[in-house]
Image 1 (cartoon, rainbow, N blue to C red):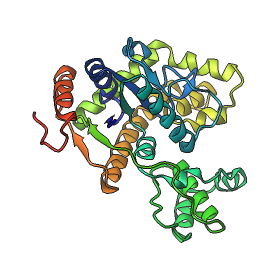
Image 2 (image 1 turned 180 degrees about the vertical axis):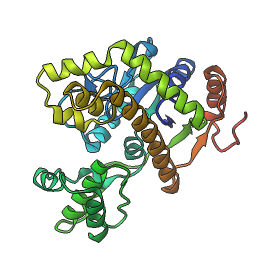
Image 3 (image 1 turned 45 degrees about the vertical axis):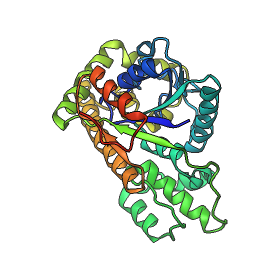
Length: 305
């Protein structure tokens, strides 16, 4: 069965579109969000579980907040979800904004199996960004290894992989590529920025800070929440008295905008890596669902707008 993929930057409306499409084609949704896997991190990650209604969803709330979850685990979990959906006779829909997770499902991703080196990470953690970039540049690049260097965390992971490969044979792909059709949402920048700011205000009104304080009260180390980035990083710093509320709002809002830009950069990288994305025109969700469903079966035909 062909896999349907719906991707886009944060606040682009991809979840609403996936739910609408799933209703029409007897679908089940697999989340491709690196933070929605964590239980108890609901408002900050925008799970919006009520939006799914009776549509089955997978890979949300599968590990406890405070644990570490890697792309190799996601690959395995996504494959199990696909098998279960096939057994149910439903159409799988992979939906999310974590490009690394999406790509790991669609293409052989052997380097995701390289084990974590905690000692190396501790050594690299305090180094300045430019020194990390230089270190990665000087390491021999393994065959076919095209690291994502959009964040500090991913640069450290790339160094970890390149270092491991100096002393081990290249890993073999754990999975074969999937037959998939990809559709993308990319709202105009002004609209995207407006949606991001409005959504942040909404999440704060829903009690996002209270949710993060509860995680801290449960004994989850602040360092773990800082690791999760964005809302969790800046909210934790604010709750620990490291910045004012005004600074917290301003810095978080700015960083979410930058994050959306990085997401689009990664999607362009996916296209360079051979994954064709049908970019949908911005229209009401119902109209987009019409376009997507009509073109899903024959994706070689031009999209009808």
